[in-house]
Image (cartoon, rainbow, N blue to C red):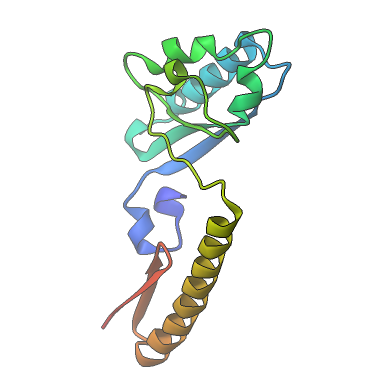
Length: 156
């Protein structure tokens, strides 16, 4: 999201996102995680209008960091407690310890191949139908066209 610099008028009403990426690993340390939180907070502090920007930490492979002998995820509790200054998204290929997930929304995918294949076909057909609908809508509604989460809208 680019906020006021978005091409789409709908997204211009929302704040822009500054993504601060961190790749977890077996060698991750607490000091590295504190640094990424400090950097994310500093990005927002530099902004004149703090309501127009959101700083997000994208922590990939949290599961690898969790099994690290350095126990780097222990600092996340203190960073996520109290006043929330930055948004946080953690991605893992397996379920983390419950104490690390109790301050978040946990989304889990299916691990059965047959269900995964069924979801893939379902998404494939949704994408095709969405593209066909977009072609129909754009041909019948040339005045104003925009798309939100894959759904096409038209106002005339």
